[in-house]
Image (tube, rainbow, N blue to C red):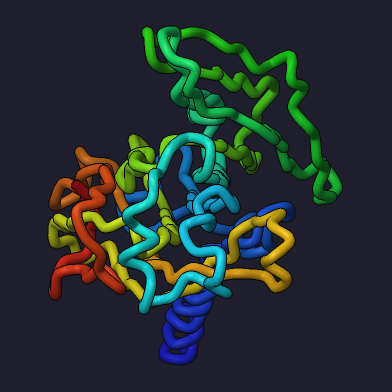
Amino acid sequence: MKLLLIIAFFAFVNTAKAQLPNEKFGKPSSMEWEYNGWGEAINADAIILCKKMKVTYQISDQVANFNKNSSEISSDNISDFGKNQIDDGNILVKYEFRLRTKILKQEGARHADIDIIYFYSDNSKIFDELTDLKVRVFSKNEKGKVETRKVNTASFIKERLDDNYMVVHVVVPDVQAGSIIEYQYNIISPRAAFLYDWVFQECIPTVRSKCDIEIPAFLQFNMNVPINKLIKSGVEVGQLAYDTNRPDFKKGKTCPTNHYTITGDNILPQEQAPEIIAPFTSQINMSGVTIPAKIPKGRTHLKIN
């Protein structure tokens, strides 16, 4: 019987690990309600269950004017495509951010509040737009029924951080131990040669941190990826549809892309972690074309320059 109990326990642990994290936002899973962390994370005040950033480029017909006779942008003509003027009017970068945090102890309620920093220069007509900011709090009542509460936008406080950046402080009131908080927001940016940083290692344990980035292949950039066993990455060739109102383009058109997926699992805070996980930053170069861009063998953490 003792042996069976031990086997059952490990089966439960493996099942929990297999089902977590839940990347689908909008409704916490039953496993997430029961989950309280792993290893050294068990004693944390709060944990990040899932943190995601999806990045896509929106290409307009102004860019596609390089070749009116071309039905689509392909590996055969992408070198010519890359020679066109890339400016704020013809390429936009769309970021979709999602974050789910669970409060494990009452003193961890402070981790329900977040700051969202985005580019909005005082000295430029170029700025990023923060859109679709939504915050929900899930909690269980005395009968165990899940109750959902939307955080009023009055709790969102905008402030200028410096000459180039704004910050929105999201204050979530009345958070209790056991609550799960979901945040979602988008950023639309005209700055094709810049990507926001992504930090895998937070001040509280993180079950999953994931970046999904699809970049037009005519934008080439270099990869510098520190080795870390907790983070896995991959790249493949993709296709990105671009918008056009041109009457001579009768069919939907596409552009080859480099599609990167970077995932970190079970990441402890820096003071607990055996190795430092640096943020990944990015700066795109247009000096050439690589289809697809390569992630160096054996490296797992993106830094683009």
